[in-house]
Image (cartoon, rainbow, N blue to C red):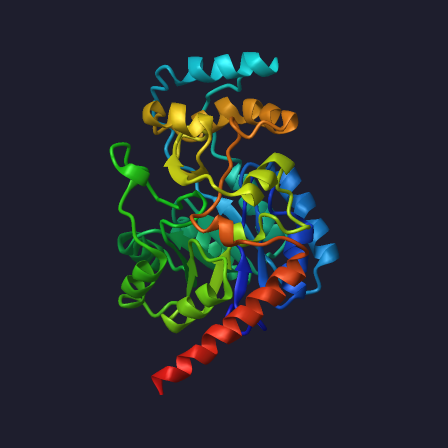
Length: 349
């Protein structure tokens, strides 16, 4: 699946805009592998993006889906009113803070119909029945995990490979369940630590992710047992990425720390610290996707206005070390850096 890549790098599925068919096609053409982000899209929109990517890419690519959580009652407290005040500044209405399943069942049918060769899952493991259907259709199943316990669950449902996500990663943690009282929503493992812990309990192929933006990072996780490295932040400023201009500028300017916040979506996600993160994080409820639906039109308006202080500026801890330019050039740089790092291992002889 990933062991035969010309260059063991996977473009992470970045939902909400950054991942585009053009980015996936460019990464696959350069010898890596790309995942389309199915999160937040309708089934029809996902169908269109798969078709567009298939037109552009000569190599296989994958699709990522969000596993829906329970539709429990969520107390958003004063979070609605706080965001309503921001909405008034932009002359828009807040979204309806309602629960939905992200059209999971319909999008699963899309990837089955399109016979997508690799389907990955975030926010949980798919059901054994869904895994069985995908396997019968010729698809490989990949599950994102953030702890050894989650890895055990993914193995139990029949996953073919695991994406091992360290806490350094940008955007949402792939937690199966968000613990409201826990910073970051649950136990926090660094990418290398989690890779070693998970590799000690399963022989499945492991893909490491979390704060990997340099070729030396890729070399490090390969040396630690990963079959590939999944990078998201490294491609946020790629020419082919759909990252909003204000987000790109904030990444290029640097200087902002990153922090976990539920302010934008109701799930822990690593973002550059802006006014929304600083002011709303302490009281943001664990209520996904209700909070995400509430804030979506407000964040969109902030992006259109070029205001980075109310946008979800998702990025990994090492974002300041990531570059820009065509995706092919980014991969060429990563390859050179990885080879240089590999030569340093000669000291171990």
